View 1 (cartoon, rainbow, N blue to C red):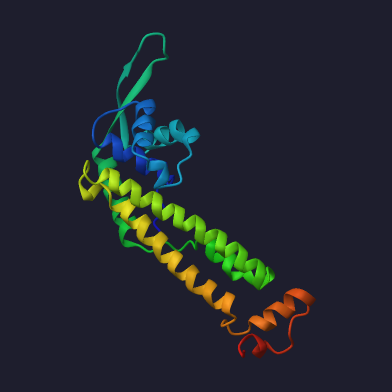
View 2 (tube, rainbow, N blue to C red; view 1 turned 120 degrees about the vertical axis):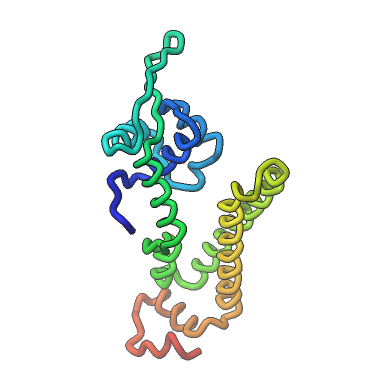
Length: 209
């Protein structure tokens, strides 16, 4: 991934909304929350003003005016610059076209699953499968509500979430089937290791059933 002058993904989100029209940070946050962008990327709202300041420092946004609303503090309105538009488009191109090298947390857990033992692994994977089902249902419900109201172009990230959730559930379901039926090669050796704490001298025990 390219090293960016403002690498916080909240900067990407800010550029996406000021691309539409000039806004002050409070309005940026309100629009992003309304659109559920915190579900699409890891946003830390407490760093919003710092991110906006960094975007301004590097010439991606610029202040156009300060507004006063009643007794509230004065707010600075920002707009995107040509450099900011170019940075925004380049960032999106990178995200869409480049595979992320950072492995998901679930993969890290799977790489260590042997420490749990088959029975505990089955229990935890069943819990995960139930949560995946709930998440998939939530995505389907959201799509059902939004499709009559919004063009598909603005819903593709929800479609992606649903597809990835269903794909993971399919894999977990298949792995669970192997564990519960005893079809997974080496499951007996795995169970003995978990019960005794003694690792087999011959790794072939984890291969042969």
